[in-house]
Each structure stands twice: as C-alpha cells, then as structure tokens.
Image (cartoon, rainbow, N blue to C red; front, side, top):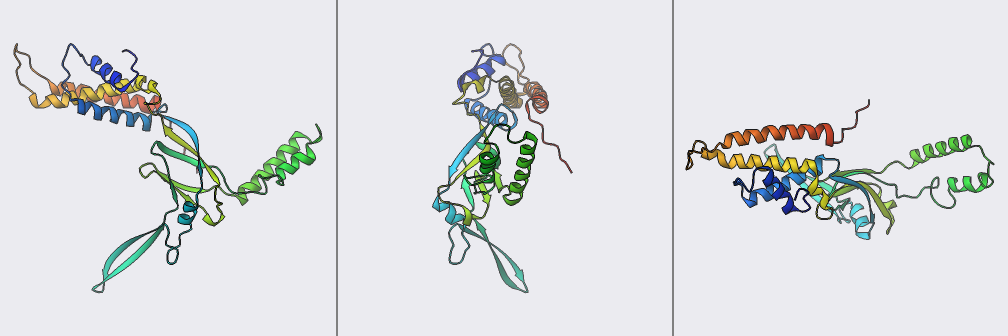
Length: 280
C-alpha cells in the first residue's frame, strides 16, 4: 500500500522503497522490529506531530497526602532513606539522607508536563464570595454601569494580587521516571481535590493509524533499514557471488548514513519545534 495504515504496511512500504521484492533485503524481522521502535521513538520525541497537548486530571487520595506529609521518625510513610558513608580518622561515618515521596505516578505516554493548574482555594478568584463574583454582582449588574477600561484595570489589579498571594505550584518531572513531584504544602491539600496537568502525550499509532503514513516516518525508517542492510553486508565485502556479482555493503551503509543526516537536518529545520529564547 502506498499509504501504510499499520505496522506491517509500513515495513512492507519501506522494503519496496529499497527494492523488494525484486531484491532481497538482507535484514532480519527482529532487526526491523527494533528499527520500527527506534523510528517511532525518534518521531515521538522530536516531531511536532508525534505528540498532542492534552489535559489530564487526577483525584488526590489519602495515600497521596500521607506520603506527601511524611516527616520520618514517627511518621515514616513515604520516606526513602539513602545512606552515604566515608572514612574519617580511621572510622567509618554514615550520612543518612531522607527523601519524601511527594509524587504521583504519571502514565508512560506522557513525555512532558508544562504545569499544573492551581487547585487551592483563593478568596480573590474563586467562590461565590470572591472579589470577581462581587464585582460582577454589584458593578456590572446593569448594562453600561461601568466603563470597560475601569473594569479591565480592576481585573488586572486583582490578577496581580492573586499572583502574589497564590504562586504557581512548583513541580519536577522526568519522563524516564514517570513521576510528577509536587513541591507543595500537603497540609493544605484536601482529600478528593483534583489537579489538572497541562502535558504532552504520545500519539499512539495503534489508536491513530495515520501516524504510520507520516512522510517523515516513512523516509526515516527506510533509511534506518537501509543502514542495517549495509551493516549486515559489510562483512561480506569483496565476496564474489555466482555470475561475478560482488556485494558492496559499505556503499549501502555510507549512502544510508548520508540520507539519515539529511533527514535529521530537515527534522531540526522543519518538523521540530524551536526551543524558547532565553531572556535575561
């Protein structure tokens, strides 16, 4: 198929680009499976169409609060101890470090988290008795009772106060851990509260088959298979086949390397989101 809609279709498409079935592609099925996984990983981590921005909500449980409030000693829940030792004056001295398990487990498909939305109560921005609600109730009840400029300036002022009194929650995340660390005061976190994650999630090709038909992915996987083909044939360099044909695995390998360099350059210039500018 010219438009692959599955993993098998994608592999067959790449083999045809390399000459199959006219030529025998000397690459094992196990090797191709590994290359498909490598190509998908590169596609998900570098291509802007490989991920989708989404919002996930999580309900805080009592176990999360207990782990977050762990202090060691009489409250050892969620405390992980790491010990370092050294020799001082011919004596071995240990230095125990305690780490709080103030994290929630994140699905493996999430590869990046921008922020979490505020989940604490604020008298400025939330609730029936907030300033925002009272401003609408008292000043904007009648149409044209308040100038838009005054309203906009008041809202900006309230936003500044809200920003100063309710700062953004500090988080730490590494996609290889699948853990979202919340550096918050767990004593102020209520049971049953929801936190909302602004995150990036992999576009699973099993759910969205059009991933297999991506133009970059097809070219990249074809070049990977070609390089593996050349790698497999390098050890047969100079071997004569019946009819005087000589295998040239080195040429195939070098051609594939040049193609991969060009493809990665196109990725950086065209398909990859540019990094944010550093200011200050």
